[in-house]
Length: 443
Image (cartoon, rainbow, N blue to C red; front, side, top):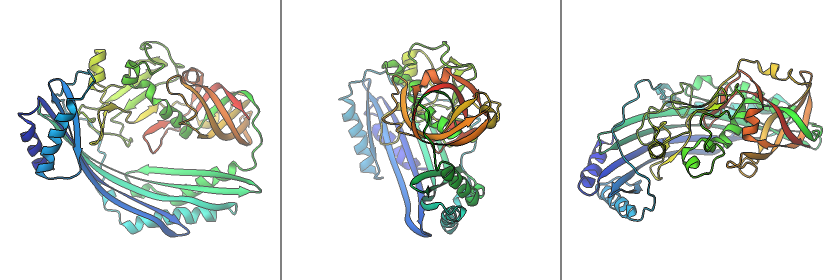
């Protein structure tokens, strides 16, 4: 696809620059939100764009367009050349015809593309309907949403690389507000898939309502140090918040607490953290990254020991390493590094077993303030939380909102047990429920 467009750009750039890379993205997105069984918002959008990256006399320049015609393609090449003149970064950039990944899972479902829009709308309506019927304490369903999308990407460079990929996905979520007396609590459940038949609106609505009503009538949390269990969703949230500490660019710039720690123990031996660009159930799975470099499963922490950082080809060259296939950019942007399917590997315990390991445990099921309350450089965090008090393996009652604080690396060192209830969130971060020996709780 788009062969003529690529040929036009390469032909024009051939005698003007040393190397050229073209990144194209084209796709569509759909979403519908329901309120009182009416469509509150309905969005469908097509998008496509081409970004070029050129190297001229060792300098790198970028430009992009969303207008597809010959004159515009020539213009963005000229613009990229002009931008390269002002590049102050001394990074050595090289392009190559990187090998193809032969074992990449299929991330495109033809059947998903065939689902009728009326069925999508009905799913969202059912989410709201079942949630409202589930419990008389439900007074509002602010979120009853279905969405899906499809994306085609192609990357090619003047060294002969030419790769393409098509992906699609669908997700739905329902958010419920329940109240009793003056206490109001939110509960949310979601599901992401490539199989529309997997959606179960009754189950999702029931789960979200239970999450909401279980939190009602909380009692104050006791201030002090407590054993804590992050449920799978909140552990994934914690991982995502501190994912940047594994970014090789941050390491090289001295902005990560993992700098200089390769080969050192940085977590409990029960902890293994990986970034898996080829995960069969991941929604950031792709055969190649934004440089066309093959993706892979990268073990970052293995049994508590730091093994690797996340690299693109530029940071890898600086470290004398190889790229991990985590080069990242959209057609509008410059090259960086990002996670793909980022996860802590599941343990062998049942989730209920985690609550039997201490006489008193606080379960955390909701976190707030991730942007303002977490310092990715120091690893320190102080976050608003909601959850429950457990005693001797039994859930006693919900807690009024409280604060949980600590340090991310110290928290990983304090891991005592990991459950087997692994789940990805909607941003391709995954975790199971995790028991932490001790964190600071302020009621």
